[in-house]
Image (cartoon, rainbow, N blue to C red; front, side):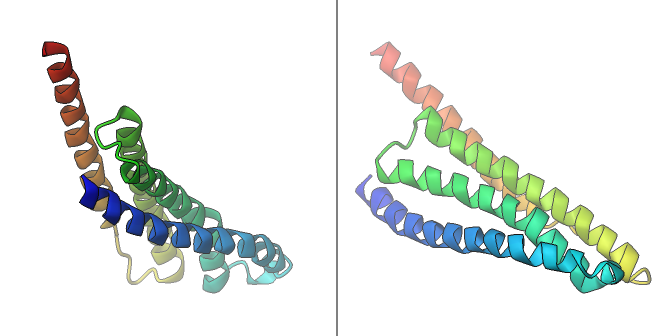
Length: 154
């Protein structure tokens, strides 16, 4: 258990740094998006499309994924492995990751159709990561229920 706590402390620091970077990115977006709105003539520009999707869709969703992982590792650092709230954070991170992947796939599909109609791709790689996280949460939930059953039997 001590190793889990040590590794969780290290991962938590990395996730905190990532949260700060993503938060700063969203703050920068508050200034970048209005400045691009003044250039309405360039709304069909690929760069403007990328800026809007990055700041309005991807960064907030990535922030939510990272925030739930940060909360998860905070609880692991404190030694709460098979607690329902710990598993809930892992489930939420998986759900937000799947949401991010679906939104990313839709945005990339629209981008391919609008800006490169001769080369349309259908992405969706990130969904697997979210599904794996969700599966791990399910395994931990089963472990939590087994732990509760053992406490009641004794």
